[in-house]
Image (cartoon, rainbow, N blue to C red; front, side, top):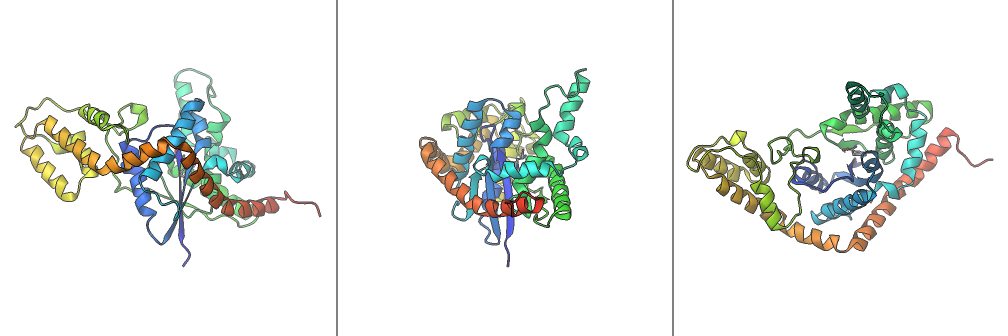
Length: 335
Ligand code: TRP
């Protein structure tokens, strides 16, 4: 049986938070333990440059995200874990795909359209602040995926359109030149919790409401204490379905623990007590990984070595495929 190839990229801009953990990292690492799949995970540092022009931040985030996945138990013997910029075939393929992707298709990309819309709303030139990087974003992402003939690509809802574009680009290439690319499919897991942040909106760096994944116990406790609650007193029944404390609890708890917390809410648990329990629950799940994370962060050369090994494994796929792509489009040795 040929294994399903699953691939996903993580843009290296922020510091991993509980929302990233629950929504993406934990399910991805769990899924990678399935014997019937072959998993490719990579740090999308070229994508980071699209939205972040702060070199230190890109570099720091790359280190933090790599350390996070390793600390959480990603098995790099069974998976291919690499950094996008270590694979020179990716930008090379991007160019060739650029020459096959319809500009009209790219005009419809959500991220680009939103930027143009914001400019129009502000009475600016439509292209104000829009880089070619932003415009070409879906082509780079298509190259990431097609380079490894990925079948399944786990992503958030906002990325479905990019997967459709990757399929379109692959189909055109296969039709015009040679059938070299698998048509990838987006996998959106609706069961995975979208974690609420401290203000009850989706936990997201752009809302500034995140709880970092690996901060000290003390800071974790403080971040949890900052989760917004209402003014109900101890003893007054509280609505679990209207509470970020309960929602985050459910993402870490077993079914029984969730049922029991629901009862405690209805019985009027004090907010302070509920938050203390939440801190203890999260801390228990993360404390070992936090120690490994701190060790890794103190030894970047070790992370670097793991990434370079991953790149070598990845290039065993990308180099021969790129050779076929060059040949197919007519970039050849003269004979
Ligand atoms: N654009 C994706 C995001 O912002 C990250 C990404 C880059 C990616 N390349 C990818 C995801 C390839 C899946 C496959 O979430």
